[in-house]
Length: 97
Image 1: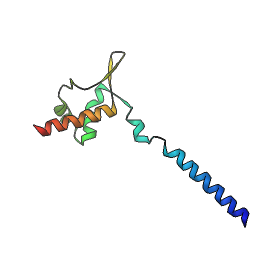
Image 2: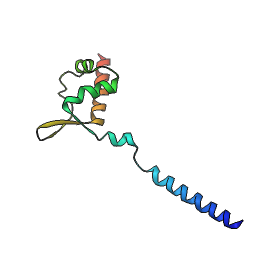
Image 3: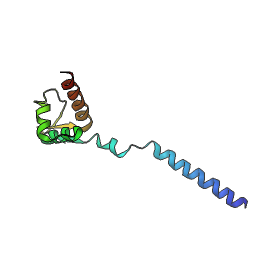
Image 4: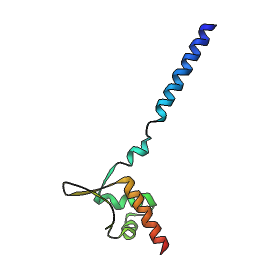
């Protein structure tokens, strides 16, 4: 009987320890926020964030002069989380008008 109690306590300790290890790992959607978006796909993602079409996203975004981007080999890329923040800031500006 004492053997089963000891095994049960050992297993409980193991599972609690494994649960605590996984608690500090990043979630899948947090890793996707580092994702780089190509310049040609920006309007698609703006539409995706806001639930609008790509055409409506182009009208909303305008020239995107103040959008922070990364340039690699002459091509512009935007980090997903920065585009999301910029998009919601843009929407707030349009709502204030």
